[in-house]
Amino acid sequence: MRIHSVRFNVTTAFLGLALIVGAAVLSLAQGPGTAAADGGTADVTFTKWITQATAFPWDMKGVVGGDVGVGTFTGEVLSLVDDGTTTKLDAVYHINGGKQSLTADLQVTQTDATGAAVLSGVVTLGYLKDAQVTGEYKTLTTCDMPTPGNVLATVTPAANPCFKGTLHLTAPTVTFTKWVTQATAFPWDMKGVVGGDVGVGTFTGEVLSLADDGTTTKLHALYHINGGKQSLTADLQVAQIDATGAAVLSGVVTLGYLKDAQVTGEYKTLTTCDMPTPGNVLAT
Image 1 (cartoon, rainbow, N blue to C red):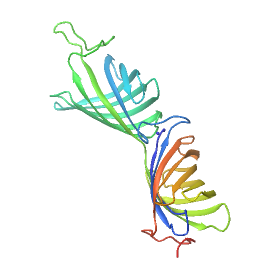
Image 2 (cartoon, rainbow, N blue to C red; image 1 turned 90 degrees about the vertical axis):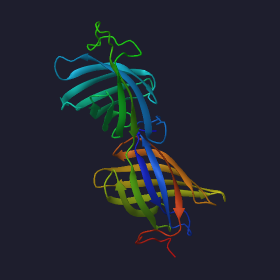
Image 3 (tube, rainbow, N blue to C red; image 1 turned 180 degrees about the horizontal axis):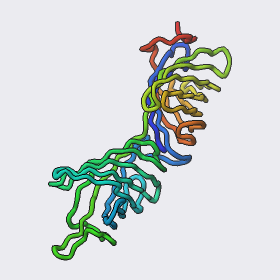
Image 4 (cartoon, helix red, strand yellow; image 1 turned 180 degrees about the vertical axis):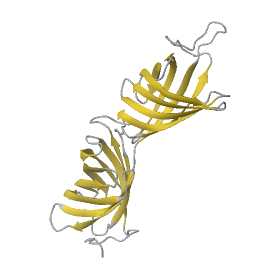
């Protein structure tokens, strides 16, 4: 999530009498001072093997790399069902990288004939909490590294099986459209609607200050996201290029869902909104 990252797609309107509405993307990171590889997304590489398969949950160990940094892997296979063609597993992966750590709850579907598998699930703890997870791995009959404690290893025939793959993490997204309803004195008031992973709901906000040097407009704003599933407040610094209406945003979630998440983003401004904007004081 720069985050525990959650990503937001945004429509906005507040940056001048000619600028009625805009569109943007925000990304949230899980903890203060952290950063995702690409705006709320990250890739984690892993090599893992089984260290206990006598009873469920099975135990797994291994190594990790990628955007979380080099580190260790532990995990559990909670259940396994094999229909003779496909093996389906419910597993928990604990990623303990040198830069970031997380836990993911995953559903795994492995093709018996090839050992190739696809994974899907969600980050339940740590870095990029609530991020959606997809991934894949292949099964190596002879691993390309030592696998201490590997209970599937055999001497005759010689085998040292492991599972080598990648997890792809993508932070949640929020869409919103908003407009200014009071611009007589600071703080300006904003209203709107939201959607995406927080659920359909309402937007309110305040522009606390604005300074325009003739080239760039800088604003301090609060965004209150009141979705049907999740709600949050973000404290944001906005820098908009006057000539294009394009802006970049940065800040932090101060309340609610993903509290303390780092926020980054960008938007473009639309002069005519694609939906009604009741109370829009910038409409002409």
